[in-house]
Image (tube, rainbow, N blue to C red; front, side, top):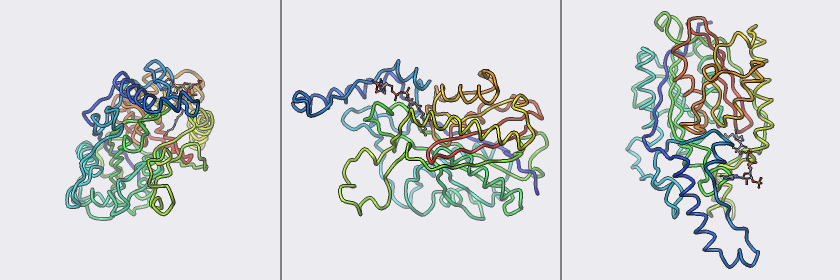
Length: 374
Ligand code: COA
């Protein structure tokens, strides 16, 4: 078995930022319009008026202060309420591949791994902009890699599940190095017209290069000690959009269930114990005491959720340094969240330090990666 190393990471952050104040102003303008439009039905008691959103609620319930998006103009237009992106000819690079390349360039440079060593490209994300050909194959061609490429989707756990696959391939010798990209254009499947969730998501792309230990400079990167993946079916986070849509009567209409839906409270309550058990079980299998962990890079969905998971894993309140959050700046970026945290907050660790990258979300799904600084 070969040593597997996370040799480099990269992040592409879209320049457009939406603050909570801008988001709430746009949503409330939309809600006022809707209530005026349906005034008679509301008056007659046939329809509930839309309630206003609030910055104070968003910050308290989630810890999110702002999000980056690929297009803020459409999202903030009360007459549109979604990103507006120009259609591209088939010959042009697709948007997911474009942002994947930006993150991949950074990760490849940071890793020092030549493209010639990349045997596999995995595009792991919670949505893919088309059914086929795979975005990963487009990225593979654009970077000039040989080997093979494929797309995969395990929602918010896509990146950690991809690390598991890449690590297994490198360990057993079926790939020398693997590039993972996580282009998350969550603004496309977020429902910006629903105050319960309109603040949750943001757009980003992360990239990870994994390689054989012997191909990475001494002292560089993090050795992947082991990985664990877990799934347990739940409808509490669901999106019914899919290729059978047109076959079902009424499904081409503007339906709520064609975007992200969740029962937030239920998810919070059910997922926290699953994640805590996963991490503690994984550490126990590795013979690592929770007290020996230097860092927890958790999925970035909700600050309160992360505080609770961190406290249960460590048996005390983690410091900000031990468990860095990026969701205040990025919101929930689905599979990319824990990778942003890892990428931004890992350079300072001393050789031999141990940490856990952990993601969780729809499925339910959860992935845990135990790493050690070289
Ligand atoms: N502004 C003001 N009030 C709002 C609001 C908004 N934007 N959105 C909801 N509210 C209201 C609700 O209607 C509810 O009112 P009620 O008490 O009169 O019924 C109240 O605020 C509380 O709403 P609730 O949904 O119970 O809030 P919460 O504390 O559970 O926080 C989440 C909501 C989504 C932030 C939280 O449940 C969460 O993060 N869950 C985990 C989600 C997760 O990890 N998902 C994975 C996604 S990949």
